[in-house]
Image 1 (cartoon, rainbow, N blue to C red):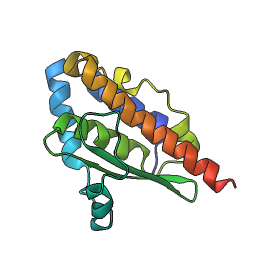
Image 2: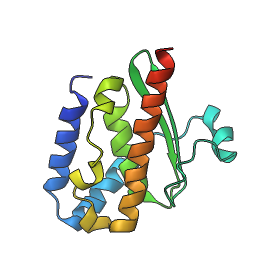
Image 3: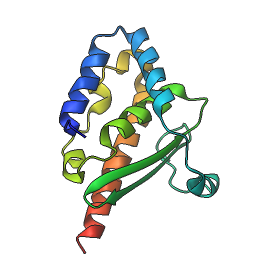
Image 4: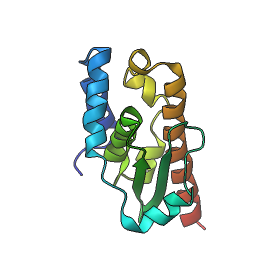
Length: 148
């Protein structure tokens, strides 16, 4: 991984900034297609409702842990919510494999940074912000667990 999380986020936000609001939705759909399918070993947990982001109306499931000092995120988003899936795809692509300290150093305003308010509206933005917050909290918890 050659770029830091901050550099990758800058690249992604520049990509979104070049787009009109409607094009931003199309860009999110491209990121949705890049989100890997849920590995079979996580499907039973998802089906049992474990690791769901309850603050988001869309069924979003996140498994966040550390491998060494690197963040690992496994995610599953309902296919009928491609914009949410796209945002999760951006986060997974940006944070997966990154040092925990870099992920924790990211400002919490990611949704605004990508200029998604005009494209998605306030209600959806709250859910997306909650997803980013859950990732941050789970990374913090994993870091705290590793230091014990």
